Length: 346
Ligand code: DOR
Ligand code: ZN
Figure 1 (cartoon, rainbow, N blue to C red):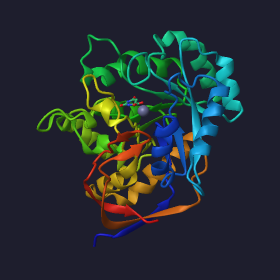
Figure 2: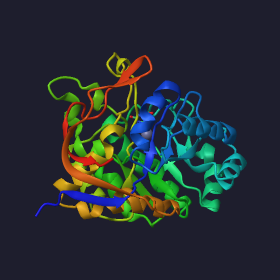
Figure 3: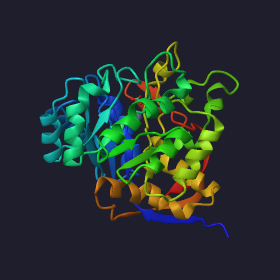
């Protein structure tokens, strides 16, 4: 008989964009309501590159939390060509930086100050391997000669595989995996290499970008791939394997910045993230694996204890809001206006 409720340890979001100011204030409650902790991406303008910037950002996040919310932001350092190994180590040892993020320069939103060539951060990566600090990668090459749908696979071949050979102990999270290639690669590595998987990449293939017309709210980077890749992601996420865990990549942009010529990449999935994962695990007859993916595998990889609190999902219908106000702007959530079959109880 199909179950109609599910209790799990409180989950964490291992990949999240909170932005700043009015946008942060508007989107943060959707995450803090569900998740105990989140790895907060550092791609602000200007990016969070140093320890004091990360401490200040963490303070702003804590201040923007709704009253009574229990939520811990885990901060990350944005790597640039100029990042100093000592600054990264100092932030990690002080408990300010949980990890460091590699954005290949110009690969995605706010990545202009990212790394232009991986050799430029050799010393930083060596230091991170030495101190056990995780490297979070946006795994796409920026070579304009490479087809946009192949950029993840080519990144693995050109950048990631050589890196894991050179620094076999480095802890690496392949963020927002979108291809079977990424899943296969991560599986073939030791326990120090893992991947996050977003709710939207489990639900949409690249067809969704063109369904009846151009769909800017389905556009994110790495862009959704063919159906065969989506199915590989679903198998990995629902497998219970410790290498795969929850990372929403919820990335809000004002509607006006999405619905324009040269619209921004990013899908704001936070309002229905956990419920979307529950729907996928339910469809795959794997609800018994949701807790591993959402609440256990991530902390285990990061060397943190799982949350003690529990959350309960019930089989109950509700509608994802059509839009959310953020200051003078508005944001459209993933699956806006759609009915969900699982609901988190208050
Ligand atoms: O679609 C994306 N949006 N991918 C990223 O890597 C960054 C993110 C953002 O910050 O909007
Ligand atoms: Zn992201």
